[in-house]
Image (tube, rainbow, N blue to C red; front, top):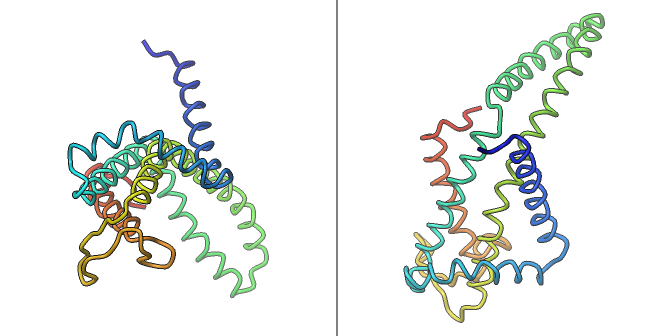
Length: 206
């Protein structure tokens, strides 16, 4: 039977590991990203071998679907959505009433509402904490997969994908700003699949 102490230790480990990955990618640079991508090759290269290197868009689709499902489940069970909805609704009402008090120059009411603002700020801080925790969890899966794709595609001499309206494009060429075509495809797929999964799991809706 899993004890509460074990759950707490596992929770701390995953948070520390996720934060370490995020900091490593930002601070340690290209060498760390390549090392992370190489490490994931043990798992992902056989997957490419089964699906086929010519079907890299399917591999990216599967990756995006896995990360979208994982992220949605993490967010569903780590974020208090009722608190988030209630806090946002209270903030809307508060801002409207505070604006009316300012327009009517009701200093007594504004002073009273300043006390309410402090309480609401505490709720917003709690919301921010709840949103940061899933990010660390999600990075444990998503960042290694993403770094593998980056490392793998970078090593290909020619890899193309046919886009609507754009036609056939090399995956490593820029699509929008600094974002290469494979990253654009990955995020478009991830956003679409994520919306379907979040709808099915009733995640969010704030």
